[in-house]
Image (cartoon, rainbow, N blue to C red; front, side):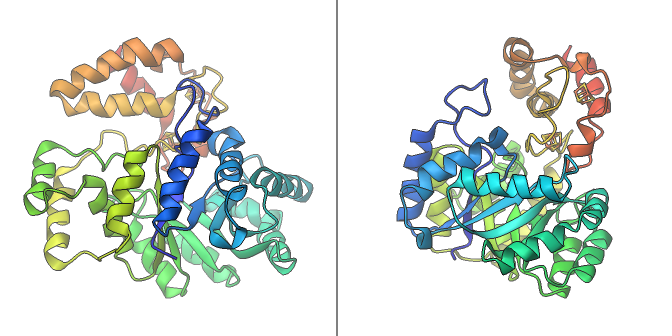
Length: 368
Ligand code: SF4
Ligand code: SF4
C-alpha cells in the first residue's frame, strides 16, 4: 500500500457543535479524490465520532468501492472493561456499522500498562486470534500509548501480533511521555511493522511559529508544514503507513500531492527538522483525540480549551484570538475550564497521560 492512510477521526461535521454529526457528502468527495490518486488505506475506531466514523466509512467507501480496492483498520476498545460477551457484542457492531465481512487490521485500542493487564484478564488477544482464524480479521495488533518497556513486554508475551500502531512525530521522537524513537526501536527488535498515528501531533505541527516556518519555507517554499511532519514519519523503514486525520479537501490535496510519489527525507531536510524541533513548544501536548470528552459530567470541551490555551500561550495576535474564541464560542457551547469538578473520569482515557483537571485549573486561571 502507499504510505499515506486516511484517518477517520477528525471528519468534516454537518453541525460544528455536534461531533457525531458528520457531513457524509463531503467525506464522499474527499474519499473519491484520495482513491483516485491511488491511496487505499482507511483507519477508523468504534469510539471515533461517537460511533459515527465507522458509519461514515461504510457510506463513503464500503458502499461505493469494491471490497478488494481498499484496506481498513478498526479498533476494539477495552475502556469500559468488557467481558468476553461485551467484546463479542462490540465486534459484531463494528462489522455492522462498517458494512464489511472482515477487517484487514483490528487493534486493541490504546493499550497502556493498565489496559494491557485488563486485556490479559479477559484474554483479548486470544479473542482476536480466534476472529483471525475465522477469517474475520486479517492482521491483529494494538495501538499503543505507554513506555517502551511496556511495549517490549507486550510484544514478548504476544508474538502472534502482526502489526502495531504507534504515535510518531518529530516532536515526540526523543522526548517526554511518548518516546517515539524508543518505542519504534522496540517494534523493530520484534520485527513488527508499524502504522503511524499522530504524525502531525493532532494538527499542531501544521501551523508552526514564524521562526520555525521560515526554516522550512526557505528550503522549500511550496511544502506545507504538515508535509514535513508526515514525510518524517514515512521515512522510517519499518513504517508501512502513516495516518493523517484529514478534515477537508485541502488536507487531502496537500497530503496526496507529496505522498503520491513519496520521497524520504534527505540529510539536509533531517537537519532542518532538528532545528525546528528546538523551536516548537506546546504548553499542553494534547492531540485532540477526544477520548476524554464523552463522559465529562460538566460537558467541558477539554481539547478545544487546551487548543485555545496553547494559542493563548503563543502570545501576540494568537493570544488575543484564543481569548476571544474561549469567551465567544467555547464556553457558550460547553462548560468552562473552572467548572471542572476534578472527578478524574477523563484522565484515565487520555493516551497522552495528561493531568486534565490540573491543566484545566491552569487554563481557568489564565483564560477566565
Ligand atoms: S475531571 Fe473535570 S474535565 Fe475531567 S471529566 Fe471530571 S469534570 Fe470533566
Ligand atoms: S486531553 Fe488527552 S484524551 Fe483529551 S483530547 Fe487531549 S490528548 Fe486526547
